Amino acid sequence: MNIKQLRYFYEIANEGQITLAAQKLHISQPPLSQSLRALEESLNVVLFERNGRKMELTEAGVILYEKAEEIFYKIDETIAEVQETDQGIRGTLAIGCNKSCYSRIPKRVSRFQEEFPHMKFRILEGDSYYLAKQLTEREIELAIVRLPIDMTGFAYHLLPEEDYVVISPAKWLIDPNKESISIEELANIPLLLLHRLKGIGQFEIILDKFRSQQLTPKIVCESPNVDILLGLVEEGVGATILPKSTLLKNYNRKVKILHMEDTQIVSQSAIIWLKDRYISKSAKRFIGLFQ
Image (tube, rainbow, N blue to C red; front, side, top):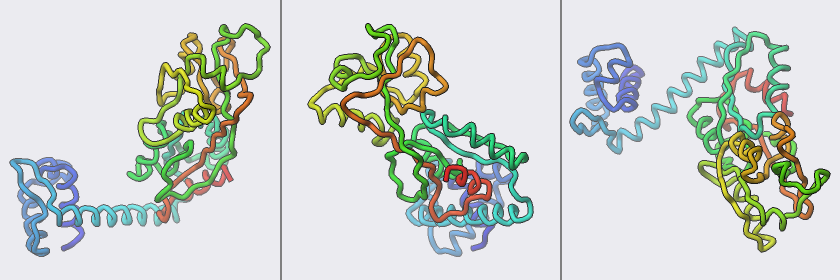
């Protein structure tokens, strides 16, 4: 077995067809089929079950695919590390960020580009579950996320905690000078809450606070999108509960920020990256801005 055979096998597995893999590799089908046949003969195993035109990995094929993926990740990391030694900090840094954490991004990107003007950024938005998945698949190098998430396989740096606040339609308030609201009052008004696509997050934390007071909130909308919730608050559909910094750039006269009187909900966020994996100089420097 050699690296070319392994690469060909890997692309066939990714594409599920000899034809598509050949197109991706810019070679004809016969040498690709011959390479696969030679690989199977050298290992004395069958790597694919042929189901019509579809190629499905056997148990042995799955094991080889997982090992090949690790090998190619290591090769890509090695190439990137060697190139960085000569090129310094330049290129594109791909990062992820929860929409509710955006306030932590602009000043740090500005500071970074002042020091390293050749750097570009690609910023991906999503909830914590989605961004963790993108990190694992190497689509991004680091992410700023709201906790909790499963931290298995990730290194992290905790960011300063912040309180949750209630964001209410201003027209609901009889007293325009009202500055706080009790959890009992909240249980009697329509609520719009952030809810991740998967996993446990802010939604469950807020529900637990109500349950601890033997209260059941009136939830009229759940969404993973902060902008949707704030837009609904502006239209008077309901109130929402969010980390305070979420509203820094969205505040207007149609909404009112209220502190929670008799309970405290704290938001913890972190910058995370893959543990025990190579990360670029630019990613290390960017993480340093949060420390």
